[in-house]
Length: 286
View 1 (cartoon, helix red, strand yellow):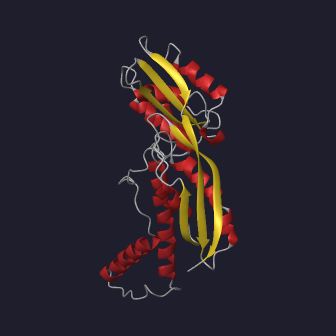
View 2 (cartoon, one colour):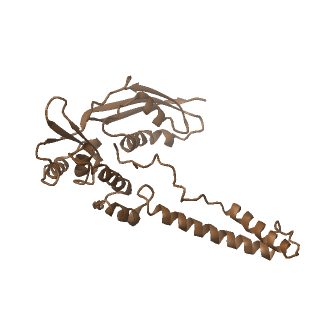
View 3 (tube, one colour):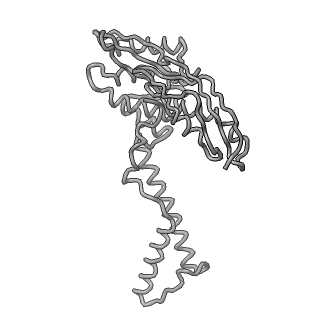
């Protein structure tokens, strides 16, 4: 579970129509031609750019396309999956979710999704995850799970800062929220902890294509770290193949991942943080 859009797998709804101004123009001209011919008036100037009737048809087509776009926007504004800004605020309010100070649209969208799932009674994991997320806008991911042998609920917290390690203020805020009478069920023992269990380095050799600028290599480390923070979360394994795929951007000829040499597995409820990223420029090749 990360801060990515939880509805991203959904296709656009049928109410949102594809926009094609050329198709609208063709329909308008075909309708105009049929009406002229029905009245016994010849019309064979649809391909004449400076014909007044054609110009008027093009104007009408652009206006109709703008109207259809506005209808699409209005339809999307009513859907949590596609709305943004104040439209998303309005939709989230229906589920008793309000935006935190500085909270992004994707983070609010995710909390709204959790609020819907968390309405199950009995303290489901979604219930605690939702409570934890509203404690601090800097939270990147949360996982609530029960101990295998003991009647203890652990809440692992992953930060969007400091490589994922939450600071004391974040953990204290989450603990205060989940231990409150409004959240914790009477029989639950809840423990809040940092999700980061291991920090691992990355080392790889990079070959560029002859035409690629060195700037391509220079930004690879930052792009790799940003991709890890954007795409992963608690329970995500660090795979050499994932590293290679993210480093193999346009302009890169070859990537040789040296560390880790094998997949690093994240235990349940834990997260892996990236340590030093050591990339070596190996030269150029076709």
